Image (cartoon, rainbow, N blue to C red; front, side, top):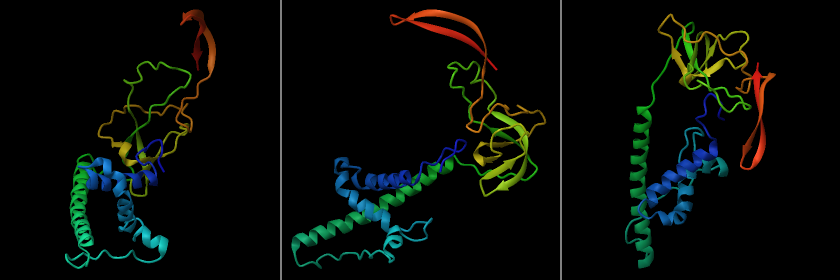
Length: 236
């Protein structure tokens, strides 16, 4: 499940599709039009591999027994020459596939580790929190929004929630959840706060609750051969 403040997960189906895409890339990198031919083998490979979350393979979860072992084929075992060549070709391809998958896994890990940094905070530390840009649906132009401070705080850490989240001491009028992922937190190293308060108008949906106060100006304009009414409204 993804959240507004940590949109880095997209569900189990997306993870499965990403794994199958990696398998197909290793199998058909030189012949991409043949991906449909290797899709059943990719599906079988995924379902018979060990999953860290399940502590077993999906095949074992579904059928209650371990998947059949793939016994390496020995050349010349089959009596039919065509079958022998086919099985030998499949055995060579599986060896090459294992090699490609291992290389892809190491490459993805190396790239991911370049952008990751372990962050650890202690209870009582002062922390800045990075909030998502709050939007008003009724206002199309938000002046100086890009130049506004990205971080709010500092706020005191009350408790650690799980392994990657912290609970902060927010103002009483703040209408957002007080638990934040570690990726949007930054430790305070200065006594000068950037933004001491969180906008009190923030609703639980992360939007600013604004109400019209008065009509400041009204005019009629011509747009694409049509007359449109434009109203300048003062919001609370």
